[in-house]
Image (cartoon, rainbow, N blue to C red; front, side, top):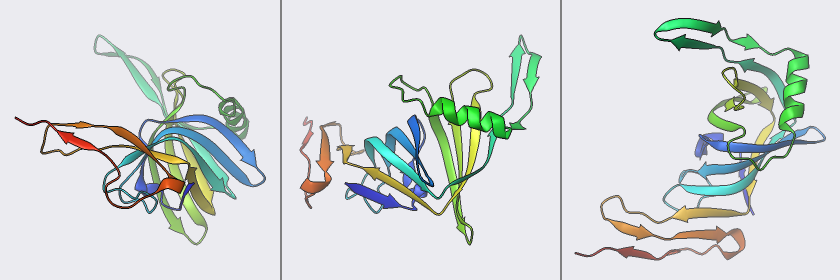
Length: 193
């Protein structure tokens, strides 16, 4: 098993899908599909980015500081026909939203992350996570979460070999943690001629 702690900046969160939210004591756990591990991540043994098919993102001793629902503007033929400003969700709305996303789903792109920003201070790790809930015009929200630690756990990496300077076939492969080997871990064929 791969375990990455407090390095949310070493993942590419864009288009990762939140499949389920669950809770364990003081921890919130997001089951996330299609998360990319950057080559700079301490748990990526490769010199290039890889994909995780499924990961558990654990917010240890979390506190949801706020959830902001982003506003929108709708135009028709160049005229503004509807406008909704940003708004902070109430405690009741946050509770309802968390109940809705706690439902396990296998539908594609039901809720996807499009950006994550973070910083650490004396209070802990501050995470700002933009999510599209795919429910309509007002479906973009921003989770502001404070936690003691952010841990991402996964079983295997899926990587594709590539060389930007050559036309090549890259084979997809997985690297289970128990089978980790150094050196050449993939086959790579270049087109000649």
